[in-house]
Length: 338
Ligand SMILES: NC(=O)c1ccc[n+]([C@@H]2O[C@H](COP(=O)([O-])OP(=O)(O)OC[C@H]3O[C@@H](n4cnc5c(N)ncnc54)[C@H](OP(=O)(O)O)[C@@H]3O)[C@@H](O)[C@H]2O)c1
Image 1 (cartoon, rainbow, N blue to C red):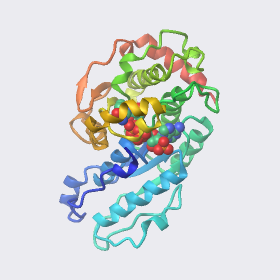
Image 2: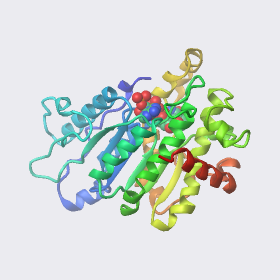
Image 3: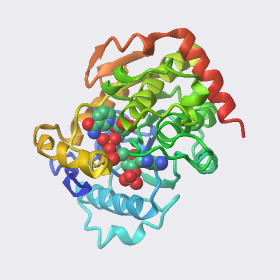
């Protein structure tokens, strides 16, 4: 399923206006959110829902072209909601730190969506994006670590890590650390998008170094599962280490969703999966699962939990292994030492 399948921001969103109505309808008004992989699938849906709830959103995307296209579409939809004929909002979408999407004449400012370009598997990119975000935002209220891949082959990243692990775990570990002060200032809620596939993960089958460097490669499914297990270990350890800072963190399996992720699997797997995409949920189910952890009942102080879509659940035994979580954290610090 392509990005064209994303539902547009619905036309029944009320216009911003009366302050009491704003507080109810825009519960995240004035909050700053950062979403990795915001141009597609779960990240795109979460971005749209955060904006509708009033938050300003920074999307981190690896492709300028795909990021700008999503930015233009989202801004167009925002302006339609605000009752403004855009006259080609896409023309404004000039990339990182682009201008405001528009304002209604007599109401509160529209939430702002901004694009940062970074390949999450490249530490230099992550550092540059974090610096740019840090310079712009004094506080971050919401961080959605969502971008993810399943590399079909054993491939090494620019920093010589296995690509799936580098993207799904190491890049997000680094980004979160670099944004820590801003998250502390915003009493940030971190949502790490994992997968129920983490249950197949095994970070004890070899040394963490061998797994991270791709020397213990056992195929794309194992690499993906290992990286999604790492997402949950990181979540739980960050609560132990950062809970005192007022930061919360939860991990979520967003559902089995018809998103672009399946188009990026090897051709044979794509052909096998294609009939099943009919039975998959829409990306919005994942967006709503993220929202549940930042604005819904799950967001009310819940921290250190794993959610299967909207329901709290016990993750795998390894995901709850404190020694493994500690080891992974220490190794990840070494892997990301600048
Ligand atoms: N779909 C499911 O059924 C499912 C199930 C469980 C968990 N998940 C998780 O949900 C998350 C979102 O996936 P999705 O299903 O929404 O798939 P998707 O539509 O393919 O979205 C993935 C997003 O991550 C971005 N991305 C990939 N590699 C990146 C990199 N190196 N740097 C920056 N951005 C990168 C993609 O950018 P491009 O558009 O440029 O590729 C895209 O925006 C992933 O963490 C995935 O593991 C999905």
